[in-house]
Image (cartoon, rainbow, N blue to C red; front, side):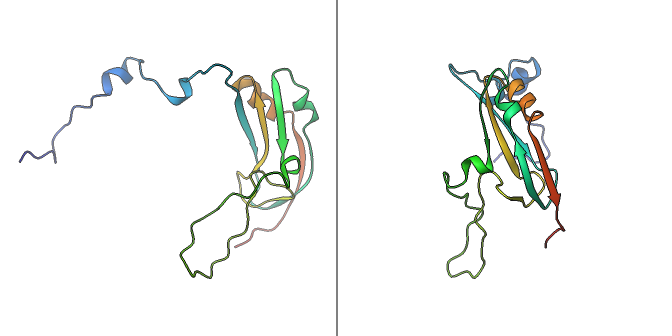
Length: 138
């Protein structure tokens, strides 16, 4: 039986990747494809006082902008973990976008759908909002 431990292995994908001929999911272009970008919270725990996405919605190439308030009651919650049977662990329901408060750095606050990735990302800069930073929780 041949052993591979301690031996160099020839990687089949190297020539394709080294010569720039690799195909990545970011390279895929499909007819009618749109792009999304998510505005994420910089705070670990904060109350969302207000969100104004009107400037982003008015930007050319922006197809839709959603905030947590826009989606409240229209989408279910995201399952956050698998729980063992008969577990007494309580999981708090988690919405796709934060509605009244963010609970971790990176919590999604708004979603922009646009005709290009750059337009979607630029539109995030046009969304105004204000947080009231709250003490961290354990």
